[in-house]
Amino acid sequence: MPSTQAAAPSAPASTPVAPTASKTVKIAMYGDSTVWGVTFETGAYTQSPHNQPVSLQYALQQKYGASVTVDNRAVPGATCPELLWGQSPATTSWTQEMAHSDAQIITMSCAINDSFRPNETDQDFQFIYGQFAQIARQYGKTFIIMTPNPISDPHNQNIWSLVHDEQYVAQVQQVNIIDQWDTIQATIPGWASHLADKYHPDDMLYEYESQTSAEVIGPIVQSLLSG
Image 1 (cartoon, rainbow, N blue to C red):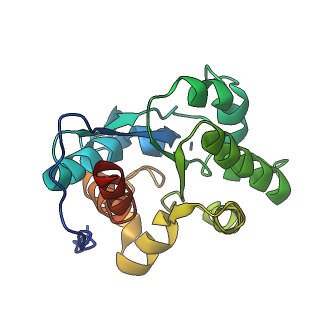
Image 2 (cartoon, rainbow, N blue to C red):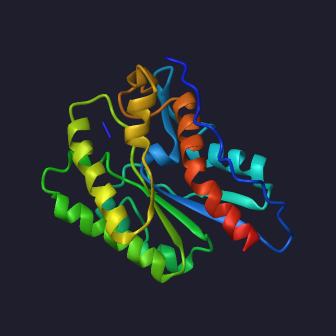
């Protein structure tokens, strides 16, 4: 794959649940390097300690306690077809992942690398995301689509089309969507300044994304803990 301070979205308004020892909620986050947490600092790539899975876990544990955990299952460099079929750099197919995962909530965010693939059509992309949703549901998971962060590159126009595909699949499959792409561009003036290499967020933007995700995932966590 090839700072303006912004206020983070407000926390979910739901009442905190006191978790019991017998109830836990596990979230697994899948996607590319922007989910894994790659960032570019002082001329080098590294994994941000504020990557979204880490920051999301912190936010949710502050509200719901240590019984909520978030597993980082992202594969840097991967495209959606590779994650579906288990092609390199992915090592297992989506069906295998879902069959062996003990997470109740699954998020998927892949599109940036796909925006550089000239032969991947909107129909291909919609089919793949539909498979992600259906297979996750088959194994009893709550599946959530997460759109990617925007990029400071002409391919951002291609991502716009893929984001619309994700929104369409969310409607067809009746699953929740965390719309990072639209939210970041609508709420953070100068958002591109938080992408040092034009593609990967800095610490502040990763933390901001985690708050956006918590607004959608928090009520689902509460329902699982209290159900």
